[in-house]
Each structure stands twice: as C-alpha cells, then as structure tokens.
Image (cartoon, rainbow, N blue to C red; front, side):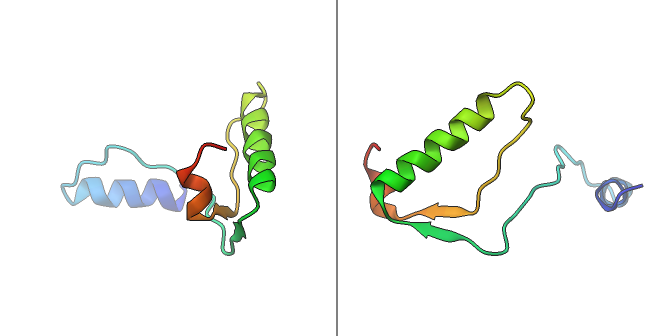
Length: 73
C-alpha cells in the first residue's frame, strides 16, 4: 500500500470525504524565464509533448515572468 493510499484510508476512517487524490511531480528548484522567444519555445515544446499519444502528463520547472503572462505570446 502506498503512502497516498494509506493517507486516503486514514482520512476516510476519520470521517473525511476524499474527493480526489493524486501524486504530483513538484520541482525543488525552478528557473525564471524572461525571454519572450524562449517562453514561446518552451510552451510550444510542452504543447507538442502533451499531444503525443504515449505521453500521460508533462511537468516543467520554469516560471514565466509576470510580464510574459500578461501578454499573448
């Protein structure tokens, strides 16, 4: 039994209703992307990887600077 399954079981036994539980990859370090072309490339790469049939999920360890998120790339 995984830790996640055990946690769900303990919470349910304590009377909590678990709606959703999943394991996630969370980076311990991130890179800030401030270059518009680099941001476009990375977002296109992620989109391409996600469109592949054999790929279930894609994770990344970059953060776009706020200015890039406010404008359409």
